Length: 247
Image (cartoon, rainbow, N blue to C red; front, side, top):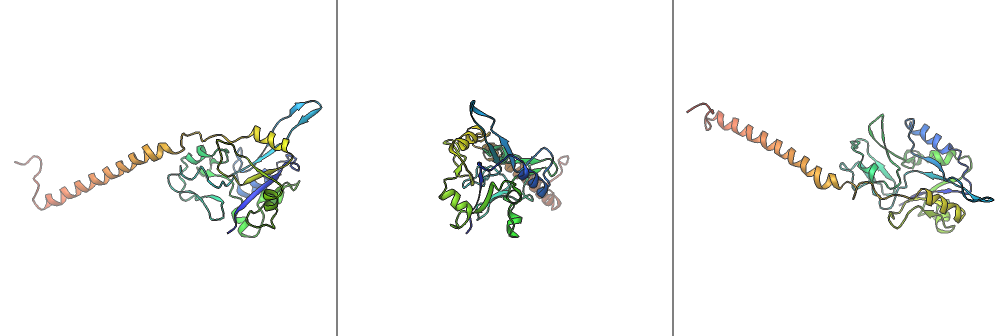
């Protein structure tokens, strides 16, 4: 089974935003939002020894996604090939997965009121095409492929050339978007855009431990009340119960 990943070569990225534009066009992303975005690290160091880099971010399709467990409906799930998907038919737009993502890679689409994010252009992959951002990259800095295929570019970059994952001791969930480049460039990008712990303590805990039991209890009470009322009417019709005003 394939296990897909993406690599960005920071030595080649020129920050042109072509990947963002291509992605937004391909998926009709609302203005002001992005599935894929490019950020500038700013300039570090002292003249003349200055350093800067770009950082290309999107959903990382992690080995252990923090966004799945908080989802109350099962809308967010991981396919066998490792791609983290969203079933819009099940998504209720609650935003728990958005808060759970350490990489800020998700957003609530204001048009459809459901969560949206990169899915590695799965529908394009099924048609034998590259993801839109990879196909459009003017500097040929983005690569996509199967980590289980030794002949693929991403396999060579990850296992032979040392491409790195953006993770920390606090957030180590196996992101499958990797970065290749000079160590100082990668270090700068990682320092500027390090992942944060989920904003919700044990993301989704409020739903799983408080709200869901209350909702289920309310539903149960409603059905119980209806059942009692129905039974009362039934037996009343058989003459087993008298009206409240009768003696």
